[in-house]
Image 1 (cartoon, rainbow, N blue to C red):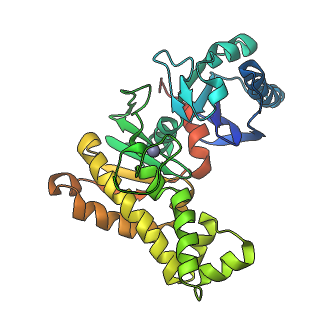
Image 2: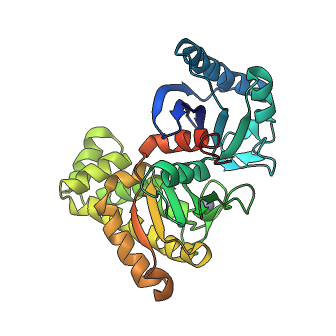
Image 3: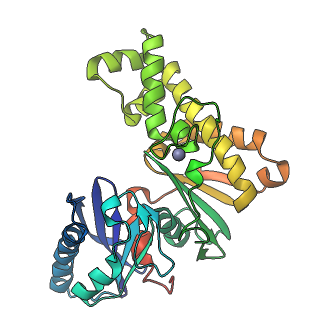
Length: 319
Ligand SMILES: [Zn+2]
């Protein structure tokens, strides 16, 4: 049996797993993102977590094909470092070389959204689809594209930053990179929480307003739950996010021409409350020749997609 380690590096924590050639995660580990102003120390923190996983692998007599690392950001052409990522201290740090020297196993980096897309293509809801776009909607919005089984990396080691296309040029909101009215700032979980807070104040009788009073703030999970319980204000918040997401994805269709778009990430937990208005917007706003060829559905692998995809760089000849 073939095995590989996948590491999904996130802003607050890194998820690690040992993955089989059929996409099963047989061992898991999670560590907080190391905090330091020394990149070597941060890399050392990740390496220690990998070392723990390797110890378990030795005990279970598992031999490994390699270590794949998914990073939230741009990836160098040789896939050895991330020139710009959410873990700024590692920008340009030769992480793959560092880990290879320590573990004597092949290491490769990839964009985390590309990794998630590869996982859905190999093992999830996008199996075998010839033009697959996987969109992760959480605090940010990322996307990975698989064409004929090949992960696409045409722009900065990924498909660029489609989450920052400008969909509402007159918006009062700017993202952390200074883009006014980009998709991320109007359709991510941050947007949902911001809108929920605003509408709850305007509708004091709503369930959202009661929860805001009780808990002091509203999370995306709470907004989704309130919408499920029928709160019209919560539904309005989700519909507004889905509308903006639909506007963005309608534009993406012109570049990527996907046959299937899978929605993953924390916001996708909303299921049909998100999908129905999203489908409606894409059908209404994209040119019919694109809109009629695309299906929109939910990703299947949830929080595991990133690490499974990173590991699968070393499984089934996916490199
Ligand atoms: Zn932006």
